[in-house]
Length: 433
Image (cartoon, rainbow, N blue to C red; front, side):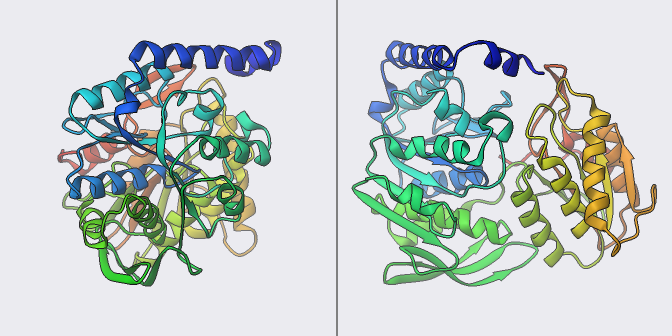
């Protein structure tokens, strides 16, 4: 049992809640409530938060609004950007308030912030007056912390329960009604499927990006995203709806969306001179991994070679599901280590492999060390995938994305999927900003 779970089992919930709330109130007070001078956009949901934040910041910049950013992969005060090395999406209350203070001092007028369910339960966003709140989707994740899907949803809803001006909700998500029920001056729905305030039509997927017609009210324009994947259209719509809620015009919205060339560790193409494609993605939930696989399958001419695993001290029910998806979509599956924390890595891998075997069933014959590899060392797993790759293949490495550390026994040890890939490919190229 982890230290966190041990403490939760012996300390009364009211005491834990009181500690988090007191800490957050003190942090906001000592920082002077910096969010009061900013238009703050909060993005919550299981998947797509980071990319939605990048899209939205780009739109606001296109609208000549200097904007700060706080995401899983990157921070910005609106002038300077730097990498998130914390391995934490929403910062602790004191650090988050300090960042917002820095954003204000840099002269920015807005901030886009990822807000996780953990952060909401722990009051990390206390004292931040959100102008606009955005819900991307809700899928299987974090049951180790929230215990039930209902509690997980309720945690996400806390963002919408806070006073705010604009609500932006994914109408395609089955939980949409719960988020739409909260009052706001303006409620906007976005959808890939049904009529909504912001929609996409005529979606065309390609290796290099994706095209669609953006429809906002009575206006529509063709958009060419540099990112690929149908899920990224949904992320773009979320950002477009939030911008529309601030009366930003459709042409400026498109300018911002089309300017985003890459989000670190999110369907990130690593291309040196190799005759096959290498993609790096953070997908670590069943829904996210399925969407990534569907995109890669539709844009790969030959085989998919997948490298992935599952995280320790997290929702164990995901592990076989992730393995089953690999069996369904990948031609060669390499199961490996992924942030084991204080769990035994071999036990985590065994659960993923069990899912692979169940997912393969009788329709796919698995042969160890031919199309199924179990390699504990993650760097060696990636090296094996790259050695096996042939022209036209896609090597897909999932689970860690842009991260620069591996969690082992509660410690952060330096490790990067990207650096490992580039070392094998033999050339170091600039990291996307």
